[in-house]
Image (cartoon, rainbow, N blue to C red; front, side, top):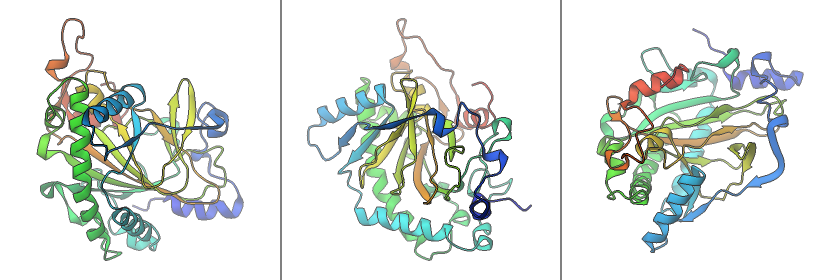
Length: 334
């Protein structure tokens, strides 16, 4: 089945300086109307190399309770590993369409592969984005069929990044766990432990003639436990706070951390998943590399029992992660 990719639509739209109707958001979503202009949100920035663990726990817990998003610097992933990840992802999206379609999603592949739509769209509206999904860890969950063969260095760059990312992930889970009064290992264990899945997504937002009317990705919270994101240099991430949408200021070489739905559920609402969306740019291509740290599909997630008592009754149902995903993507109540 032939699918219209946003990259192709963008090339046509550029020539006529307009965009198809299905990309024009309603007025209560249009970035030009709903963004608080002239203010850039400086979300908490946390230095992961700080030897004062107590301080790190406090800072991460506070950011996760009040913001649901923070940036980490001195995280231990070499700049070179990040720049290689960016380079090979960019090269893949610049390949001819036919070559990208070799790893296109199919009904059997589920979420993995090259694609355009992800979830049920309200009123048939579409996001100005193409994407690529594939698992990068653990080895038992990887299907290289959905990894690009071109550029040839794609696999090595992703494997090296995944290896470094695991240390960052383990630290974050540990600090989040201690931050709500649990043992250091409990939050990761409740998310799937060593079976935790690392799902890479590359978002490709081509230049858009009407960035005032379109969105890359609509307002959402992530389904993951945690999301660890690398952006390119083009601004686009927005966070909803105090009734307004704000642009988030990037720190060079930082990783952006989102608290996802599963950590909110596990913490029984102490930590908050961040409501965010992405805007697009008239002149430049924006790209981002989020890795979603997710429980395995059959793993059941609910509030951790130590965090539930008479004063704090359970706020969420327990359910298998695959069932949570199905409800969320199909806009069904949880």
